[in-house]
Image 1 (cartoon, rainbow, N blue to C red):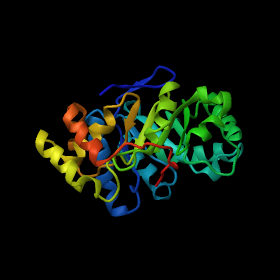
Image 2 (image 1 turned 90 degrees about the horizontal axis):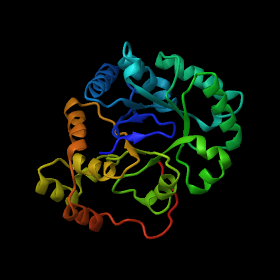
Image 3 (image 1 turned 180 degrees about the vertical axis):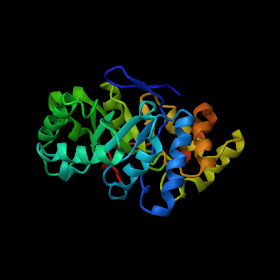
Length: 276
């Protein structure tokens, strides 16, 4: 697994932690925060969250998890597109910082493209960088044409966070090569799919059984084998989290990859960008 090198030279591991659906139930928050702390102990320094997740509840869970160890974390949050304006983005950022219990974000993303012009969002992001509120900015759920609309500012865009897993490979046709050509890391959300269907797929189970791994490890290894991609699966169960961490050491051989390619064919034409 190749470490991620961000455009400004900072580096992180290529496996982090997502928080989608965290903070939605008060009864689950202690276990969720505990899982994030365990992930930090195991070397997963990147934590991705958003103001949308649990209406800010996920950010509050993250705050509990990182209390007293903020410097151990590469902290990422995302803003609603309706909050990405010249005046509204600083306010949204301050709300996220307050919920997270910190004075800065390592990376701040536009969650998806909305009605506010991208150039206005970029201007607001750059002001937040100069103010020390965020260290770098990026986007999420933007396709090639959207990234091109950033114009010259694309050289300052630290990442594009998109849906990518064995079942959702559309980004491989042109988006991943586009980002790679510009040394822009890609953050892969839902790398294990949604709802568990992917991890029950017969082909994935066959490969996992042959190499003595779990289906989650195989699915993660498929994503992590590609340089410049950071996977952010969510796990609240300690056993699942440790299983994900072990995927960092898993190497898929050509026969394994061939079996996966047969079951989950790569795109042969441009597809609309998938997002969930």
